Amino acid sequence: MGVNEEFLKDFNSSNYEKTTMKTTTKTTMKQEEIIKIIAENPHISAKEMAEKLNLTIDGVRYHLTKMRKAGLI
Image (cartoon, rainbow, N blue to C red; front, side):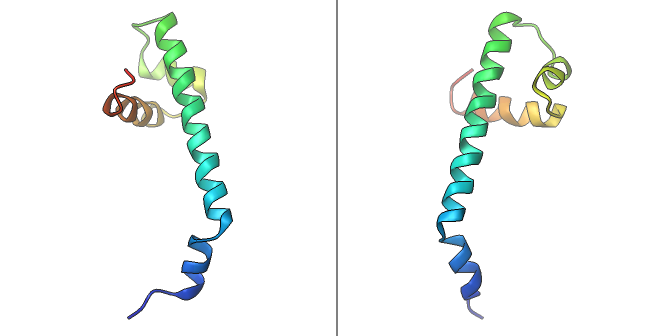
């Protein structure tokens, strides 16, 4: 069983690259916002941060985990 050629075409297309870049940029922007929020209030809760960022609590935790692994916080 081989890989669907249409899938590969879409996967390797510039749309895929644009989407990846857009997602990466959004993530970076959210990470910058999180760093600013933490700098302003180091004791802020995930719930409060989620409200400020218009994210779910799980979304905030996702970014915090990713940032910890990258050594950003």
